[in-house]
Length: 85
Image (tube, rainbow, N blue to C red; front, side, top):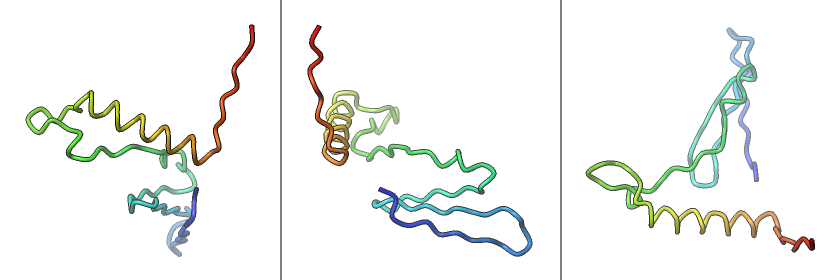
């Protein structure tokens, strides 16, 4: 859920700047002209990366993503219904 939007309108620019910070403190910003640049992203913890290759540890990543999906389902009240054929 979006909780805070800080709008800064510099006097010397016509663009409105949107600043966004999520609940974990990750920030993003964009002008109204390119607002689509603020997209959700997933930042991986260092323990999910192989320190030598910087590639994801795939088994750990799978568990991490399953956890995220479970949180999202809970947040949105997702209740799947079985489709009868």
